[in-house]
Amino acid sequence: MKTSSRLIQLFTAVLLFLFTLATSSTTFSAAPSATFTVNASFDAIDANPGDGICAVTANLGSACTLRAAVEEANLNVGADIINLPSAVYLLTIAGGEQTNFPNVRLNDLDLTDAAGVTINGNGSTIIHTAVPNAFNASTAVFELAIDAVAVIDNIIIENSAQGYRNNQGTLTITNGVVRNGRASTSGTTFDSSAILSTGDLTVDNFTVSNMPPAANVFGGTITARGQGTTINLSNVHITNPGDMGMSLGGNNNSATLTNSSVDGSDESGLMITSGQVTIVNSTFSNNALGGLEVFHITTFGSAPNIDISNSTISGNTGRGGVHFSMG
Image 1 (cartoon, rainbow, N blue to C red):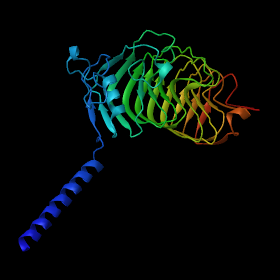
Image 2: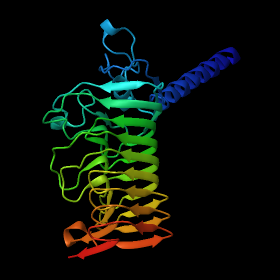
Image 3: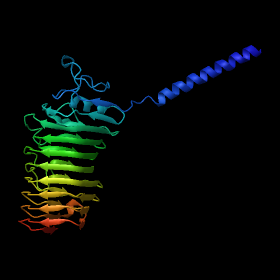
């Protein structure tokens, strides 16, 4: 009887251990964070998106392109890292991506992961070489979907109508450059040639040069607006833009601009349409239609509240240093 009782206890203990192991495996079965290292500078899609392996079609071997890495990061559950060895990377795949956004396999690089992705550029240059058409003439290089999270560091973007587009996601850009862009044909009222953001935006150490005007009314080289978003721009320097330098607005938004400058704009240096805007240690100089323009109508949201300290507004023509147009 004692032997039988002991066997029953042992059997029960084994069952309990197996049950605990099974439930633990189920609890932690979600895919972990992954790191993808790009090793090919041409543009090609991933062979099997979602398998956790960055590799393009079989006839190109084990090449991991930037586009393929983004596809894998979007479909992996965890927060991921994409490493770009310093090089020049081409985006050559065109197509009607905007008809079924997001679709990273065509046109721009759509970032969709709410868990987040960090792209380490290491000084790389991305050139958008796809022939402009009705779908990519105004597209960005990186485009965030709603609720997506991305940190993009140390990347130079050239030959695009727009560098970054943030559609109500959370975007952080550090040590970035956007330059030598091509004209947009979208005609959207609020558009941009470097950054267009309707979500939370943080930018630090960022320069923009030789960008054409966006086809818009109230957009700037950097446009940040939306509903209830937080905007932090520091060490942002825009030189000789073909459009106004920056456009900040949005209902219930909070925007802070520090240690930044706009010089030589064909329009105004900064337009503010609504929201709380704080400007510190910044310069608006030599802009053709004024240094700072406050342009508000009720459709833009509540009237702006602006706080400026330790800043310089000088050498601007057209509408002068500061111009108010309140409707």
